[in-house]
Amino acid sequence: MRKMNVAIVGATGAVGTQMIKLLEDSSLPLGSVKFLASKRSAGKQLSFRGETQTIEELVPESFDGVNLALFSAGGGISAKFAPEAVKRGAVVVDNTSHFRMDPEVPLVVPEVNPEALRKHKGIIANPNCSTIQMMVALEPLRQALGLKRVIVSTYQAVSGAGNQAMEELKQQTQDFLEDKPVDQWQANILPCGGDKKHYPLAFNALPQIDVFAEGGYTYEEWKMINETKKIMEDDTIKVSATCVRIPVMSGHSESVYIETEKTATVPEIQALIAEAPGAVLEDDPSQQIYPQALNSVGKKETFVGRIRKDPDEEKGIHLWVVSDNLLKGAAWNSLQIAETMYEMELL
Ligand code: A2P
Image (cartoon, rainbow, N blue to C red; front, top):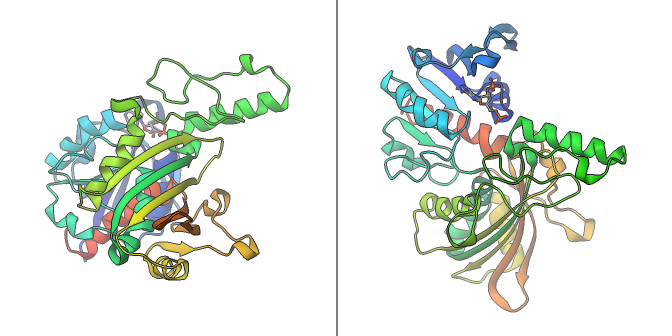
């Protein structure tokens, strides 16, 4: 059995720390592990499978001898270091948006399009967190009923914006509880670190994730639109999105409306979800059972409920889709890609 030497880039970040936890339990046969971050973190120690590991500063030579590199340190770092890692013999699974729409780079949700992995040229992109969970819920419906249109509104957790954004929300919440006036709350990161203005997220809902782009949509919304078509390999699916950040720590929720080619009853749709890989049906209004962000934290599955038909459109279906954005939306999907590649003998 070939041993894998694995590097995690962004090992101290919100996603990176989850990658490390998942790697501890991974089925991949591990040789060595290497945890990489910025100079600021170099020398810090952490425990991995009972042994002490030291965080190293990311440099090009970090990838010598590495077979698999999981990146989650921002698009700029991936742009610079992922090609370097490939040059030195590693396969890269990149959690940032940098390579996602590159036609040479497979964009993969293992439950949906694992065969795309065969075309890789060294880099595989992990889709956007909100896109991934929507794909897990919609692929079984697409296969059985055909998919014509998707209209999604997201309710996204702050951990998707990283550790500093989580700290900012905690501080604002504290300020609220201490009766500090809102204009004295610190807001330096959200809604988007790279944009001009910043607003508090505590007790708020911000209809901006990432910067604004074409047509009044944000990049996050364009990611959901474009990535859905790429993963499902169908440019004819109509997709539109509104992405909203809410003061939840982890667990993205989505209100998804779809129009299918064929009609189906609610029990038929529920059965399709119940049998789908990676999906869990939580749908019993009589018992107030439906997916909740809080319950999704720490779980790898995508939870689907509130399934109901559009009263005026027989091929229109509403769903509520929830998953842990740091796991299935990021760290788990990345590691699952790596494990799938290993099983397919692509690693
Ligand atoms: P560090 O903690 O040393 O800054 P998050 O998404 O939670 O904000 O985390 C971002 C991750 O990316 C962290 O692990 C962070 O490391 C890492 N990172 C940021 N800038 C760099 C850099 N220039 N080189 C390597 N890693 C970086």
